[in-house]
Amino acid sequence: MALDTASDQSLSRRAMKAELLDAETELKLAYAWRDERDVEALHRLVTAYMRLAISMAAKFKRYGAPMNDLIQEAGLGLMKAADKFDPDRGVRFSTYAVWWIKASIQDHVMRNWSMVRTGSTSSQKSLFFNMRRVQARLEREAMKTGETLDKHQLRQMIATEVGVPLHDVEMMEGRLAGSDYSLNATQSVDDEGREWIDALEDPSEQAEHIVEADHDRAQLREWLIASMNALNERERFIVRERKLRENPRTLESLGDELGLSKERVRQVEAAAFGKMRKTLEAQSGEVRSFLAH
Image 1 (cartoon, helix red, strand yellow):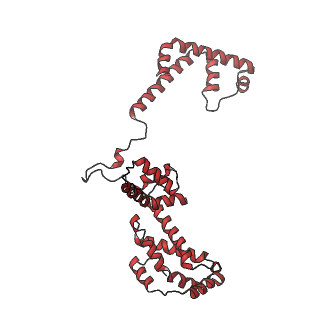
Image 2: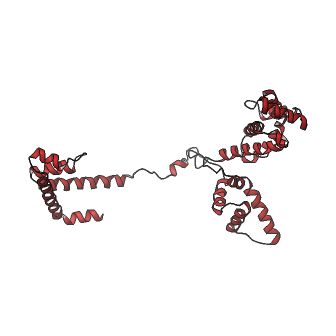
Image 3: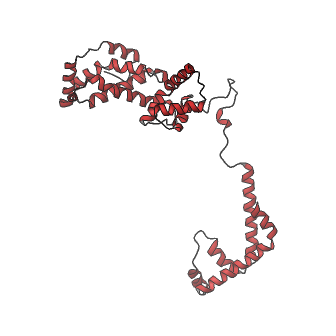
C-alpha cells in the first residue's frame, strides 16, 4: 500500500476497503513473508491492518502533527512489525503490531514537538504522553476530597505516579507549555514592530570594553618600550630574542651568536630584567593603579 503521496483521506478510504484476515490466513501470510520473503504476502498483511494503523494515528492528532505524517509513521511501524513478527509465538499479528505502530508514532511526535530534544527513554515517553492525563486525574481526586494541591505537590505526585524524577516533570512541564516560536517573529501585530531576536543581548564584546582594552594595550606597550630603552644594545637583543619572539631562542644559540657562554647569556638576561624592573618601579604608582584596575 502506497504511503508516500496519497492524502490521509485516500489512505483511509483504501484501508477501509481492504480485506479482513482470519487467523489462519494471517498465519499463512506471516510464514510466507518470514520463510520465503514473499513480497505479495507482506503487502496483503500490511494492507489488511492499515486501518488499525490509521485508527491509532488519529489518537495523536492533538499533538499538532499533520494527520498524513502520522499515518505514514504508523504505516512504517506496521511494516517494522510485519518484518519482525514471529508466527511461531502463537500471538495474533494485530496484537504484536500495536506496540510497533504506537512506538513509531510516538517517536515522530516527540521528534517534531520541539527543536529542543524532549527525551527518548521509556520513562520520558510515558511522561510526555501521560502527564496531562495523570495531572487531570490527580486534580479531580483532590477536588473530591476537598484537598488543595500547590504546584510542587502536584508535580511530586505526578513524578511518583509515572515513576520519574521530579526534575523530569518540571522540565516536561516547560516543554508541553507551548511550541517553539521563531525569533524572527515581530513582538506586535504592527509590521514595523521589532523582531524578538532584536531583544536578545549581543554576545559580542561591547564598544566600551574594546576601547578599554585598546587603551590598556597601548599603556602596556608604552611601559615596555620605556623599560627596553633603559637597556644597552646587547641586553635589548637578548630580551627580544628570549621573550618577544614567537619561538624564543635558547641560551645556547644566543651564546654561540654573541661569542658568550650559556651561563653568561643567562646572567646578562637576569641583569636586563633587573633594569627593566627598576624602570617600571619608577612608575610604581601608575603601575599599581593599572594592576588594581
